[in-house]
Length: 396
Ligand code: PHE
Image 1 (cartoon, rainbow, N blue to C red):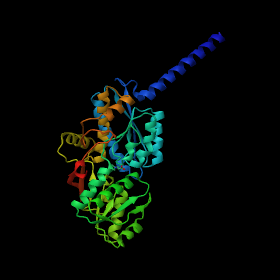
Image 2: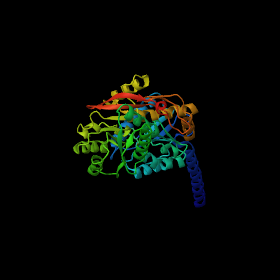
Image 3: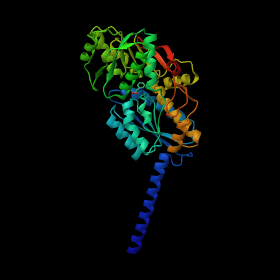
């Protein structure tokens, strides 16, 4: 009897081992969604800055993602698979971003990942997804090197070569700037890249730049940087500020405190409902480039703005719109290839054509980037008013 029992235990253990091995393979190949043919789940791993220095970025993006998933699930999911969002707060920290990517890849075994907002944080996560064969879509990281990490890394926003060139064009032609200073955050892929692309184009168009000013991550006191600008021999008429909203507001206050009356210009990193309140009105009349304007007369934009406003009680900003577009782009990609496995989503994204999103209509190119317009916004009171739209062709 004992012998029979022992034999049965060994058999059971063997069967269990085979079963586990089978599951593991399936997980690696298809993600949590099985063969992805329908009737299952598609696990979407979301890693975002929900707290910490740029929490406003992550929170807005997450709302757009939730709305898209809810709408899609209400209509039967992606090829019959229900979207399951598995969300991690990366706390605006690159170590947290890498950890979240590892968890999503090895514990949660997601089919696809969406995040982060800040380029440096997307760069911290992307290698893990690439190595595990998991497609990743960053809604809003604009630094060109993010998608260069590998053929599984995609984005649904424009890139900073274009954003920087467009801002320079606007600085020279619309703001009539002649002499500028570029202020940069050390160690930030976004800041360093965007600043460099702006400067190259600004100088090419005949503008002059005094030497760049750099501040280290975590800096709260911008008095030295600003006094360097204030005492510069060549008087600057423009300060280009390619970094994120909290520091933008702090720097604007310091510039005005020290009597620097130059105009200020920035990029998408200014987008936050807290930008104006934090700045004590010192950014009034300044400009920044951004991904979309919620007032655009476009059917997709309108239906998104309406659904979002109904659900959350406020107008969606560009981060929310890009989060929403990332989920719908994944849906279109999966459906074009007939399923939600990692490979099907990857192949579908690589061939994404004529995607009609809340932020516009686009294809993904061979480098996994879209070509999209940038809107130049003016800060008027609490509002951001569009003053110009620039197309990629305008700055090439
Ligand atoms: N483009 C920024 C980056 O790459 C992030 C960002 C996008 C911020 C959109 C605000 C709005 O770091």
